[in-house]
Image (cartoon, rainbow, N blue to C red; front, side):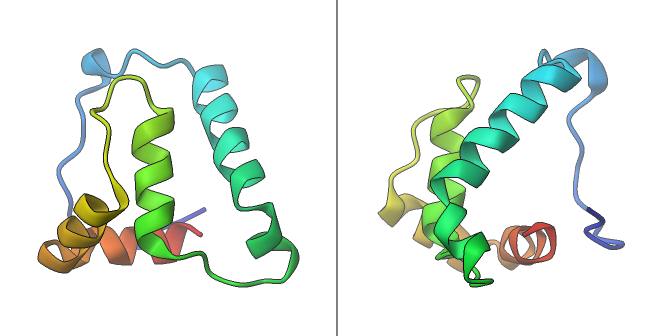
Length: 86
């Protein structure tokens, strides 16, 4: 999926320790969690989506729903990426 021309910092490839298969497995977990949203063509609650992404990626710190909501309110670019990628 394309997320458009959003100018966000990227993780250098040498720091991304996940293989393509690892990324696919992570994507699959997230899509399973939000399968009802996909089935009914509904956008998930973005704090829940962000929190689940962070919590399923073992390289990241745990992100509670409250912290995800706070982060999204301070960083609208993350909200835009999540909406466009969904």
